[in-house]
Image 1 (spheres, rainbow over the protein chains, first blue to last red):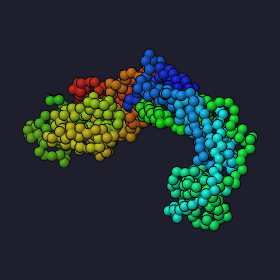
Image 2: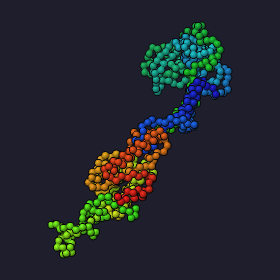
Image 3: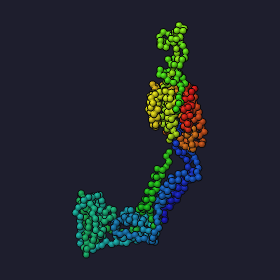
Length: 308
Length: 263
């Protein structure tokens, strides 16, 4: 078993030692007994200090130490040794809207594989519309080199048959992005078949896909404008872009320059798992269970604590 | 308590014939003295033989005998429930009250009881002791006031006197001054005299009184408790009451015999 933050475990062990010592040196509170003549007892300190050979209230001590150790264990984030491989491969395809979303997805995915280092590949069109203001910051979070694969926008020029959905039962405030065009409004959202994304929702998921059929292609649109969204100029431009021939929907975007590509690629080898930021790994069920166990033991020791 | 009676310490005052010497002179068969006839005296009490011999009218007087109403008042405060179980002060006080009532009843005296909120007025009938026993079966309920109208010639207060009831003490003093008899029977638990171990003593009547009783404080506790009991005895004796202290470990029969012993 390995720990990502073993300091918490040491701290819990230290605190447990203090608790055990306190149980040996505890000031024993005498048991309350009704005595009608209590008024004749001199009014002195209610607690009497006493040092014992055996710890007082061993059940309570066990509960307290167990709760502390479990808490420390949970915060130390243990992981069990398994079949680790030296290098794991993560590939982010062209299903995200921006490079920022690609790096966020890579960091999220890096919590799962059991490997010493992770080699990241990003296969996306290297167009400027994929580069946003946060891209360089997200890139700084990934410590190793990134293999950047330029996914060319196809230019088949064939006829595109666009399937517009009729209507949707409910809508939400969403954004739809195609290249350098974005529109925000109330959209209904529909399921899409597998295909090449040509439009994206604001969260990076495909909003329209293109499926090649011989020389032509079929575009499935997964958003339905609601209210007056369809009348907005941005939406009309977006709809016009979707009517273009196959492979030309994103053609207006300019390519990244060499400095941006170099920044994306970075230097060094695959990213070491130890160097990855810990913010993104999802909560592991065992940690939650350990925390719940610590909480239950804490409540139990409160219930068992001797009344004042 | 069979055959044991509770004699009066003072002359009784009552018209009903009984066991105790009365302040009244009457037509009892036990001759006491002669007195010259005065106008208005009952002619039936004239000693006609003496009149024939001396030609002077004398009345034949005799000591009268009267009953002595006895009310037993048992303290039902929360402190009397200590210690828990069959050896509580309440149990001991109830046994003493019942025994004293039996002694008084043996002498033909009417007896009554105030305990746990119940008042049994003075009675002489056969089942009065059973009624008292049933009344004493109830747990102590804290009420033990004796209404002024129910103060008979003899009153026995069975209590731990921890309430320091000034009203009761003043009323008892007035009763003694008026010719009545008051018995103050102080019940002390053995556990109060010598509490075991180190405890947090909690007064059952005052929750805010919580004191640690251990080796360091035990001697001071005993001294204070002894001094208080001495002051209680001095106060009751000072007002003319008959004071007896009894511990729950005492044999009730022995205590009762000591109380009813002829002065």
